[in-house]
Amino acid sequence: MDKYISNKIKNVSLFMTFFVVLLHSNNLEAAKDIVSVNSIVQNFIGQGIVRIAVPTFFLISGYLFFYNFTPTMEKWKYKFKSRFHSLFIPYVIWCTGWLVILYVVELVPAGRALFSDRIIADYSLKELFVNTYIYPLPYQFWYIRSLMLDVILAPVFYYVIKSLGKKSLPIFVIIWFLYPISEMFGGVWILQIFNYPFMLFGIGAALAINKVDLHFKSIEDKHIAIFGLVYILACAVRAALMYTDLPLLDFAENVVILFGVPFMWLVYDKMSNIKNKKISIAKYGIFIYFFHIPFQSILKKVCFKVLPAGELSSLIVFFVAPVITIIVCVLVAMFLRRFMNRFYMVLTGGR
Image 1 (spheres, rainbow, N blue to C red):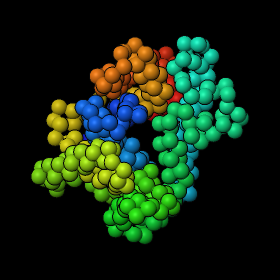
Image 2: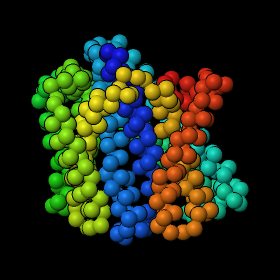
Image 3: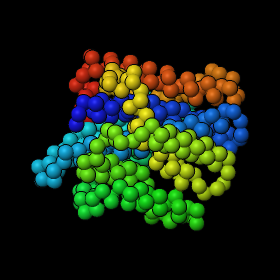
């Protein structure tokens, strides 16, 4: 992989991590259906613009897994062993660690006051296991859980893609849209398995296996503009759908992803001030992703304890909480990387 694409993947992943932190800053809750400047802004950004983040991660993961891949037994063993260390071990450590931290926080009266639902001390053993490793309390880890399943199914992806060739790309896109289309007619639940955790990983895998050039030099500026326009319009439509009961949210989200991901990838090449550089804090991107929840959730609760209740406070927290969260995450990562490097490498899966 040439240096430009390598740095681009790292930088884009960092930007998408920022998007995830902003996505999780949404705080509308029951007020999400009330039309106001606050809800419109949060829905347009949180339910539109930043929705491309995790799908981008799946696409990049699929591409990197199969980049320059040859299907030998040794290669498969290496890939599975590598992902065991980079995904499974951090998943277990972080999910367990955050559960312990939240348990300790809830033991303190001031900490307990931040949580209105059941506390961890009240969980049964089954609930502890489920809320630690199946549906972890740091809910951003659903991505790692889904990615591990993608890795397990990687041989299936490989042989399907090799059989279909470049036709696999449009076929995956069509299959990906089947469930949101079915929702318009009541929904076919089994089609949910073809949502983007699988299909975007598959598309990324198809790009790598079919050796598609990620520079996309034949794409003209007018094409990028079209992608951008449809992306913004789809974000606006999806935000508007938040105020209705129409079964079109998932379809609109797919359109946001379909046009938003390539727009983001292509418009990066027009950012002359960063495109030829490796952003220094990009190496902390995975730590930001792992650390930001539930820290950011607690931060938001503290903010709402301090600020007066209202639409303005809600909007301020939406924008300010991610900034504080990212700064704290980077500072903690820098400290651990410098003074506890071995522990940091285990936490980040060697990244």
